Image (cartoon, rainbow over all chains, first blue to last red):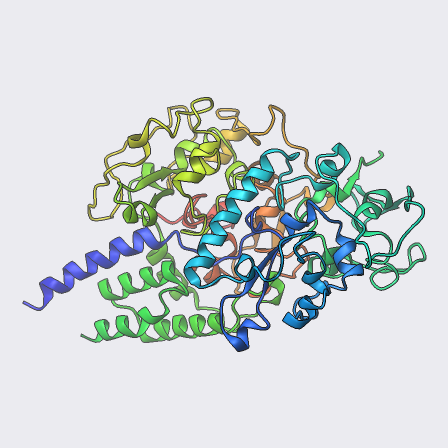
Length: 259
Length: 312
């Protein structure tokens, strides 16, 4: 008598097994396009409760350059290093520099960034996905990362990222131009040469984002390897998390091999 | 009763490792398996929870010892697909469908891979390789995402009208699969004895099929050429005294993108992938990500270990 239900149970398990076999435990090579570059800010919500703020790089980089926040507004590029507080924002630092009711919505509109509860957080996520698809449809496509070719969008004039905030940014009389390309030969034979374009980086980053902290000013002095880059050093500081993804090999390894 | 007890202790970890757990449970209840092996599973799962992936795989360090060969054989038997060949690689999307009270979607890898390479869906269309992670909604596919990218009435039948072509009633038979559908792939395909019975690599080489590599353009996508030292197959020695493993990059990049595997599943560093062994493969990691569910399963031994015979 005992054996029959056990057998039925076994069959049930077999069914479960057959279906669930597809659930493998592997991290994904490519993040979802609408989540690429998202930053979860939870250093305050961890202690005080509430849902974390999801900062979406894609919605900001279509309007502002990287330099504006990461140099002028002193946002760190390392997670949990900035330490944004409410009083900072109210004093016009960090988010509060733009979110003042003039440049962007005021910080009194709390729930625009801080979800009320789990349900609200989910709704915000869904809405963000919708907004992202709307934006993406008008942008030049790319295969990886956000699936938007931001560089091309800037060149085509589809986006004009702001590089100046009155009262915060330094007033410059001339626009910075650096057209020098830096060719680099990879250590492995048979790989196409890397072409690093200063002119493409300067539009977004100026000089201070990279020099002299990440890269030395002298040519060839910074020794790096692709492994270190995949660990988030050097180029990997931005490429891999926010700028076009590291799996887009031929974007950098782009010079045809001369035979 | 003993086996039931085991189940209750294990189900707490269901979310951590659903697939393998199912297999372990099933086979341990059906045929009974040694305590030693069970202990190994438990240790593996426990270690896994401690070092959940936080980044690239070279940070992962599992500490379980290698399994003896006899136990690996046992494990392989548990994990292998045993259903009809034409439904190998079928994925049933049922979670969202059940919530909205519609029939589940049966997705056949077999009928799709004749037309498109893996990278089209798994890179360009952002289908996750992990079950339940993609999160496809009706809104999405009507907007031209996921299935809707091709199923728009232009490339393939439209998602707007032909609901019941994908949302089908499934025959919850012994295997829990749709066993009524016959193979949609025509004749002339090179055969193999395992998996879905079709040698896809050979089919592509012989020109029987010519799957598209991108949906954005008619031409092949621009891609970085393979470095010189990767053009020949890699030869890996194995931890236990078995035959060497033969890994051809050339065959893989015909279907996949560098990004499908690197750097998340395999590092780009030579010998840099930690704890890469057969046992983990059978758990669905590393090669097992594809080679137990969609690509040829691991009873085709000689495909990777040229010195070994296939398992029947």
